[in-house]
Every structure is written in C-alpha cells, then in structure tokens.
Length: 230
Image (cartoon, rainbow, N blue to C red):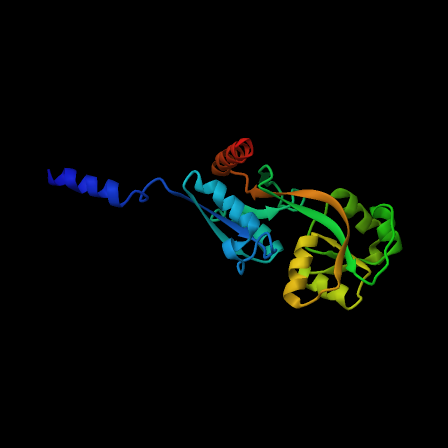
C-alpha cells in the first residue's frame, strides 16, 4: 500500500521528471527576431518555442557572435543547432528545417540620399554598398559582392553597419530592414529608410547532422506543417 502511494505521489507531483526533452540552440542578437534583451527573446525565438511546447520540449537559447555560434554548434553536441538562420548562412553539413519564420533582405539608405538602380548588379556598380562580413548572402547578392569588391563597405555586425551608414560610410546597406530599423530606433537615428525589398528569406533551424538531430528535424517539420494547416 505504501509503495502504491509513493508511485501515485510521483505521478501526480512530478509529471515532468521523465520524458521531457530540452533543445539548446545558439543564436545571434538580431532584433526583432532574436535578442536576449527583448520580451520572449524575440519574435522568431517565440515562434520556435511555441512550436516545441506542443511536444513539451523546452527551448534554451544562448546568444553568441554569429561565426562563433556556427563553429560551436558544428562540433559541440550540447547544442542541437543554430537559429534563426538564412538557409545559405549555416555551417558545413548542416541539415535545415522548413521555415520557422520569415525575414526580408532589402536596401536601406539615409533619407536624404538619392539612389536609383534597376537591379542588384547595377546597385553595386553605381554605389558603395554596406554589408555584414560575417553573413553569407543569397547567390545574386554574393556574386555582386565578389564582382564589385571596391564598392563594398564591410562591417562586423548590423550595429556597425548602421553607424557607418549614419556617418556617410557608404551610400546604402543591404540586410534585413527590420533589423536596421530596430537598431536605429534604439540608437536614436531617425533618418533611415528602406529603398526596396529584394526578397523574403526563410529563417530556419540548422541542425548538426547526426542521428538524434535527424529525428528532431522530422519532428520540427511535422510541427511546422501542422501549424500551417491549423
């Protein structure tokens, strides 16, 4: 009888002692999508956490510089992957999820700057273009970067990119406009405007390729699919 009571106590008062999984991911500070200083750690982190909660999976996020995050996850089994990431901007051998969220890539300038162009190639040909050096951009942009290196103004991160633009170091920058606007508001810079949205980009979870993560990838893909249906 005593043993039965003990088992009943464990079942009622310790329901999460067994079978609860935790996913630890590395991320960069990339507000409003991901940032330790934002409520819910950013909109993309919130979406991933909400998906995983349906399977009682706890999400832990560690914010790191992007290159370090990718290198760490590639070799350290403590982490399941990096998130959020553009599909092009992941580590070698990564297996990637369907889109958990979406970002944009756009061209941003100072309000007083006049910019006219027909395509990405012409943009880089005519203007000084700021980019984040640690990012791997989609093919069309990456090709223009390589074709016109003398027109490229590199920065280590978005905040540096914003500051260079604000003081006239470059005519335009190319990244996610929401990120630049988010930082500009924090920095008290109010003469930033988007010239053009070039494309929408998936934000994926990039897993290190191993047996456990292949199972996790299938589960996350199912959760994403089910959420789209509902």
